[in-house]
Image 1: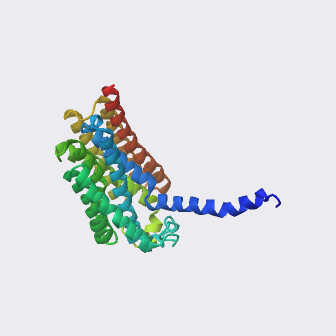
Image 2: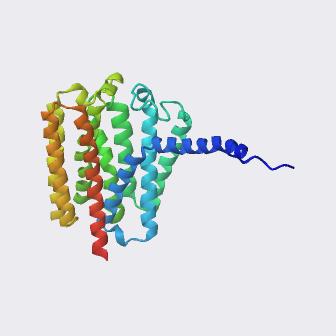
Image 3: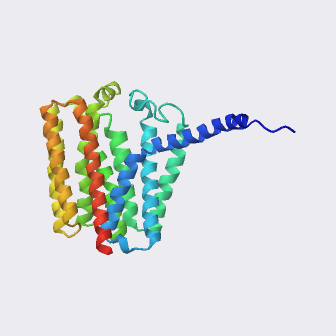
Length: 309
């Protein structure tokens, strides 16, 4: 028999490679990989701050895996519910459910099973409070934010922000076995950061939200109102990091960076007002606000690691 032409074999395998690569990319888009990773980081940082550093490796893996699974599942369910408005907005029209690349019913079934399994396993292998935090995230993100409020009022962000703070609540509870004032402060840190995260981005994509009739605050209100909301969140953020420092949860380095981040977000809110909600400026501010939260949590974790050495 003659030798097979290598080019024929390569051309045969190429569609399979592309198919696998496309599926992985679609799953990453479905769970909003970067956003989910940031939320998991907030959860794990709270776990470490609560004393989780000295826990067995299996506890670390359980917190990370169940946290990632539950947040990914909730995000995918959110994508399922929003697939109709996602299809109307150029920014989101190419998402895997809005474009029809993934079967919506299959995604809903798999995501629901994954979420339920995460909720049950969290109560068994970690503790009930960690499981309650997972439940809080679902109730506020799916029921309150996505189903009840998102398409009706700009106040929907309140429910979305509470959902965003649930992972931190769970991380602290996983380490300490309680939900106390420090758990609430760590959760509130994310809650007050959310206005900058959502409203800066919504300003840049204001036309998209108009097309989908989603009443985000930058779409329906004067830019000064949005700026005041973001600025107030930044001020509260400063108070929160001071409170965490006074309670001995964080040290001087996270305190210093947290105050700097809060000040910078406040200044960006003021500039947002001065520029009358300029879209290009809002996009830059969105990137900075995301960076600040991620770096702040990294400093918190690194400080604990250095003190343990």
